Image: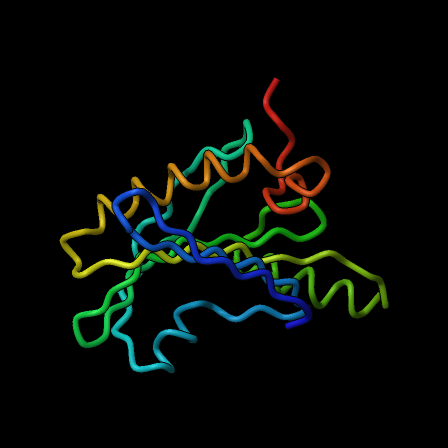
Length: 152
C-alpha cells in the first residue's frame, strides 16, 4: 500500500464509521484482512450507492468477532474506472507488462454494529455518509475515486 487516508466519523447519535482510501499497487480483498484478524466474514450481495451525482456498484460484507461487528462497503477504481477483482488483477498485470503508471484506489467504509441485525440500519448510515461526503470532494478527485462521470 502506498498511501492511506483514514478518518473516523460519528453522527449525532454516536454511530461510528471509518472511511479508508487506499492508494495501492496491489489490492487484496477486505475479507482477507478481517478473516486474518479473527473475524467471521459474510459476503453480502453487491448494491448500488449514490455519490456526487454518480451511481457506484459497491461490494458489502459483514465481519463479526466477539460481539463486535462491521458492515464494510468497498469499491476499487483504476484510472477513473470502477473495477471488480478480476478486472483489477488484469489491469495490474497489463500495466506492469507495459511498465506504465496507473492510479489505483480502494475506497472502504466500515460501519460499526453491535450485531448482524443492525445491517440494514448500518447500510442506511453508509449510504447517507457516501452521499454527503462525496458531494464535498472536488473534481477531478471525486472522478478518480468514484470512477464515473457525473450524470447530466
